[in-house]
Amino acid sequence: MSRPFVPHGRRVVAVVVLVPVLVALALCAFAWPAARTAARDLPLGVAGPPTALAQLEQRLTQREGAFEIHRYADEAAARDAIEDRTVYGAVVAGDRGAKLLTASAASPSVAQLLQQAVTGQAAATGTPVQVVDVVPAPEADPRGAALGASVLPLALAGIATGAVVTLLGLRGVRAVVAVAGAAASTGAVAAAVAHSWLGVVTGDWWAVAGVLGLSALAVGAGVAGLGALFGRAGLGLGAAVIMLLGNPFSGASSAPQMLPRPAGAIGQWLPPGAGGSLLRSVSFFDGAAATGPALTLTCWSLLGLGAVLLGGALRHRAHGASPAPDRTPAPAAS
Image 1 (cartoon, rainbow, N blue to C red):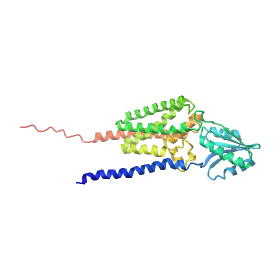
Image 2: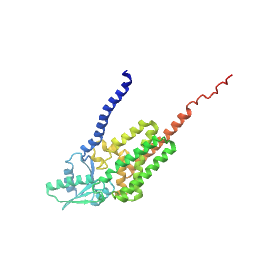
Image 3: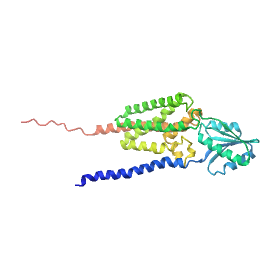
Image 4: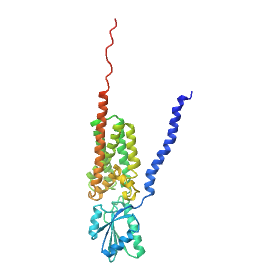
């Protein structure tokens, strides 16, 4: 009499065990990077006379592993490196003290960290420090909170697009058109909100809309592609990768070099991280250092859409290869 209840008991046990496991994974994915945020090989430029430069580098290298030092001939070269997104900031040593060049548009948290590190060392030696924000963040979002918060809605929009397309049974070209159309609409709406209304991103409106749309397309195509190949299991896998790895490892609210290894590197190979980096480049730096993240998003989009087409073709072939039902007419009654 108890046998019919055994499957239900197993389901209860599965829920009781699975929920804490998922909670643990989510906490590890989100809390671990936040709890271990610190500078790790953060690109930082130095410029000035050789004697002052040697002393400056010696003080900076006291924080072992924090900075990746780049030498420049003068302040102008250091400014160019910041605007090209080669370094996050630069310290220019001079006879009258040091000058710290930052770029809060690249990361307000990194700019604040550099200011605390450099001015703290200067205060200990009695050397004055002038702080100059070479590429400032927009006045509407001086702390970069809104730009960092934009990663999650775009990820959710992409996941929802891939899930809806798969669950509605769209396949082949129709699925590709639906994913691409939803991504384009998402990009336009997001640009209207973030650029036109809130003013938290700047730059060319169409370029911003294109970046936001490409970010949504990369996620949507990836999730839809996995769904087309593996069904609902593929949808779950795609959503888990984006939510548990892509979002917390994106570094959008700080910088990839501020996350524990290898989280920062992994995040830049996933759509949320690449999308955040590309949005900063297009919005604030005239497209500098945009090639890498643009290629990452393009690869995700093309591979995902290719998987959608492949999954549709495989399903069509499977249905076409299935044997036709036996329609032999029954013998006539005598």
